[in-house]
Image 1 (tube, helix red, strand yellow):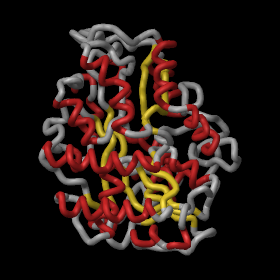
Image 2 (image 1 turned 180 degrees about the horizontal axis):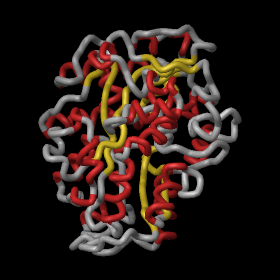
Image 3 (image 1 turned 120 degrees about the vertical axis):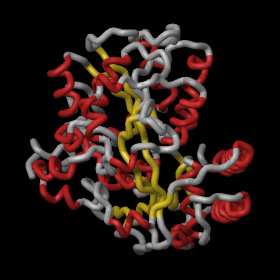
Image 4 (image 1 turned 90 degrees about the horizontal axis):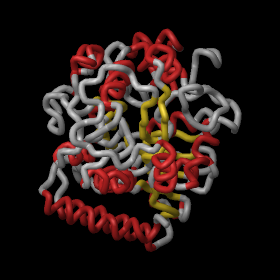
Length: 403
């Protein structure tokens, strides 16, 4: 495996770790500055600014999560000049992608685009990457552009079967799956005893060294599993029991922080020795910190998908569709997957990624076994009243330890 063929390799501290350091500046402030610089916020969203135009735009504005796109060694963040997939896109279409790692938490990011969408204004983004439950919320509010699949033959042909006909988007009209995520345990096996049960998070030896996620479905879902409950069928009783477990851990000082994507900094710097973690994040950090291991707990893990979505009134809708279709070429998806280490929605990627490195085709973070898949759970649907109840109770927990 050479540096040229493996975009994930990062043997120095100037690579993946430095990319995360940028996040300390704060996502919301960064978003505002970015949109002001682009001069795109404030336009009417009726109709979509791209209209019937089928000319690739000079720029494309994309908000994504961190560690979610291939990046060259030794650089801080992705641009059209520092990402192989974006370089190839620019070479083919002439488009520079203004790529921002501004998604740290679904609710937080939604708060940055809600006001312009409510006002019928352009958000400044041509593509965003929300998790399915948030994407459905945006669709249901009428704030997502319908995909023109005549521009997206690769998407139509290569979308993996498991993503067809999902309840959030039955006809695949609004969402293009980007990556699927396993949520489990990130454990520093050098500085703490390796454990495989959720209850290991509450070991007194780890007091003050535990980090949890601000994503309700991931944190409470995993705690529910640890309690012997099923997060694919959440009830107020099982949710309250999970909250009680969390409150006990917080009151005792067991939990250092509840955070969004910034939890990786805690693991990198040994400020946390274990965390509720996302699989691909751990996979990337391992390049510099091999003692960090991702574990799907014995009780099971959580499973979710992040999706490419075009916000209502996006200025460059056609070009956004071109990017989606470009990614759904297996050889492009393989370049991305070799870096991000998440579960890919593109048919044919295993064969394509084997050409980059045969070992990647059997990487369990990208291609989990059927046994592992059987232990993964998707957060279940609940009534609006129950979800509001869950949100209120979890928010009260988060506020105490996320600052």
